Image (tube, rainbow, N blue to C red; front, side):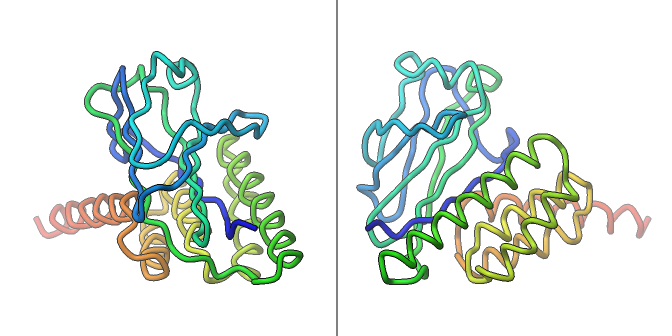
Length: 207
């Protein structure tokens, strides 16, 4: 059975450059399966990393927020929510730094843990999309108590704090995620963005 969990990041245009024609998907290690996931949870396998997705072949990328999932045996699967390609210009890309799974080893335990984690992350993502940030944060805190070594949960907490304008706690959450899963491209982008914002505020206060 695949060792998998989900990574779902709410991204702004600063987190991902998008193009009106193509989206490049990379992973480390490569040869991971790439899926497009519909709103109803249906997943369509479209290839392996590294992969160039042609938006003309997958018009869903133009019409809606799209989830791209990357899965590889022995690694925690990751997903990212990609904004509509038609809103942005430039060469689009997403990059995944896959980490080895730490979920229970037996099939039955792993399936239960995966289902619990996947359901919780899906519910948290839905709450975030509805701007129900307090409920999302409460759900994520409960998940962290059970899966405190899963970096994606701290990424999601960082997303909630960021959208609430609580940049101090957002930076703490992203730093924690980076400690658990170093060098994830999206996490590092948010850390750098928040540090730049922090430096700008401190510079203004010194004047």
